[in-house]
Picture 1 (spheres, rainbow over the protein chains, first blue to last red):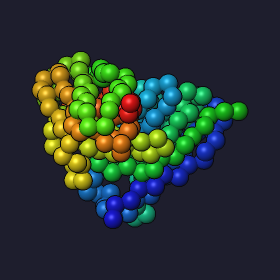
Picture 2: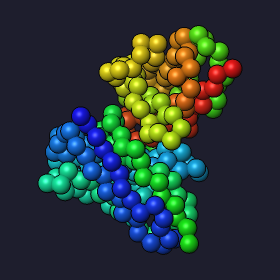
Picture 3: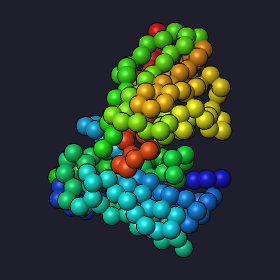
Length: 112
Length: 107
């Protein structure tokens, strides 16, 4: 059974770094692209980037300067790190396998 | 970046109606469009990929069509469980881009 679950901090202060882990089961990270998508009140659904099955990455230029996606295949985990957070980054962050299977989302609030 | 113009923003339908949502891309996306359903508090669920290919488990009352820049998504015989927001996604070019969504309500 394919499962994805995001875990994150919930609350992050402005200018700080957001770190979210996506833990997967039921498939191999070396066989699928893993995407990060966020949903914010201001911009709706936004594709942030992905890590390919081979490990290379692509980012939305909207985030490129402050976003990093990586993985640990031995732990079946994918990581999102984004620095210099602003209040507009408040939203729900999803990891997704390719396009078809999504995690429940990690709600993030950026506030002091 | 490819812009996806989705309309209408909201839709009110009676049970059993047929409804149609459209997405127009700012350039040809070669049929690389997917449609998602999202219920409140839940992640988007993929219903259709590559314009018209239904995902496993997607009821046959959902359908998609289109080509070039213009695409549509329809629900025939709307049921109460279809109350949700619907989004298109183009995946022809990076960055992937979503439409702004359509909220379906029942009259």
